[in-house]
Image (cartoon, rainbow, N blue to C red; front, side, top):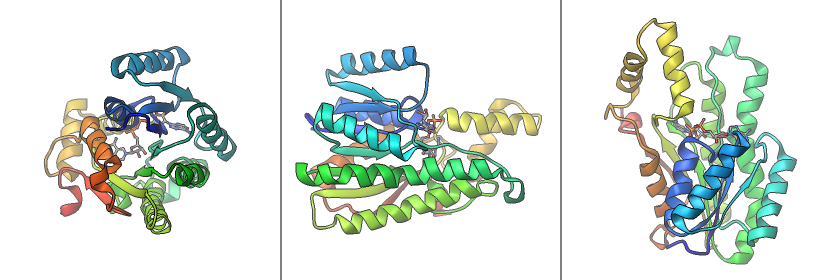
Length: 260
Ligand code: NAD
């Protein structure tokens, strides 16, 4: 379905981004990975994805906190693969603290990586999407783009900002074959959430398993994690012709979290 499309997924060396890369490659898209990690492990990822799905897979190490590196990454895709058709803004970090104890450098990093990076990637990638006559911009926000939780001031602010940015880009591209939407996942069991589970287990002197159950039962009525495969399938749907008039949505996939 996506043969000859080029998909750039930021923060795709792990977790949700990697799951989305698998789903898009399975549909025949060529993939550009991005994110941190040991270079030998990233090389293995590149080879295994490309062999498994018979698609071109490349990697660019741009730090999403750095606008110049983002610009360089988009140029790299244009030079080597013709341009970005599917842009998934997924890179993200987390830090938990009450606002009066929140380190300012953590605030700046979260806003840069979770929000501003999407402004920079979209700004740089949009001209070539226009000239190629197809574009899908998918911003991985969060339920925290729709509701708040304590101790997550920077994350919640960034994700609400990302949902706002999604709407503006959707309006500016409304009369074109380019769409822009956001996905708002609830809890997904990735390294980012594993860290929060382990922090809770140590703060409350409970087992990791008990901390996991608490985390789910507090917020996610289904009491089950959303999977990266489920999120990948939603991304594939957004890339399809059927989704051509889905524009500017913030689509929650959250086991019922924001229905409460
Ligand atoms: P993760 O920690 O498993 O993966 C994050 C990815 O981003 C990694 O590949 C990492 O290398 C990359 N990354 C981090 N900082 C970067 C930077 N400066 N430059 C480039 N890459 C960078 O996390 P995840 O849970 O898969 O999260 C992915 C996205 O999904 C994030 O935006 C997160 O906010 C969002 N999200 C996650 C959950 C969840 O429950 N896991 C829920 C809602 C939204």
